[in-house]
Length: 246
Ligand code: ADP
Image 1: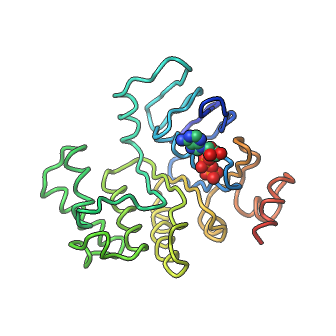
Image 2: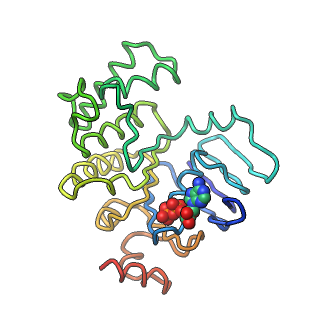
């Protein structure tokens, strides 16, 4: 589903991503872990082109983009690739003046050209799926953080993305609200959604990930099944990082 080759990203003169290669299979759940500042969020944002990679290649579904310094990618190609992805943000990023239902309908109508009734039907189905059917007409400020993030996930799903990207989806939540969001994510993983998740929730990674990728200093240091990474990491840097957390 995703193929990344020799991806680099610099901000001004500072190189943050230093050559990342990664393949994600259809239906796979990949969890990215690593120290703060190691480039995890930047990497995720490169996957849907919220950040433009400095160089390298990205294939997502059947869309292929090559990045070369000084040669900008055509806007329509970027938008087409972005449309294949759904992004769930740390701070939900809901439209504050729209209800939960309207948040889910907006993109379907303006970007995908769906009719209002079609968009509404899909929105209601997805709100039901994340356990919020009875909150459809509420505004974000009337919802808890956990509920807002579940709306955020449903909104991303409403666009029928091929891949869902999660950027620390639970790190702004009070601890007692984390579980309800992780539960929705786990269900999506079990249904075969392709997901790339940046998180500090190691228990979730252990439970749900098909593969854990450890990034440090802008490179992938190590990757493997959770049992291997958490139980028998090969690299000292991975072990040090995990030891610090426990
Ligand atoms: P992580 O998600 O692993 O904590 P980030 O990808 O957020 O790491 O950040 C990696 C580095 O890139 C940090 O040093 C950060 O300051 C820098 N960085 C991220 N975004 C920008 C930006 N838009 N402009 C300049 N530097 C940035």
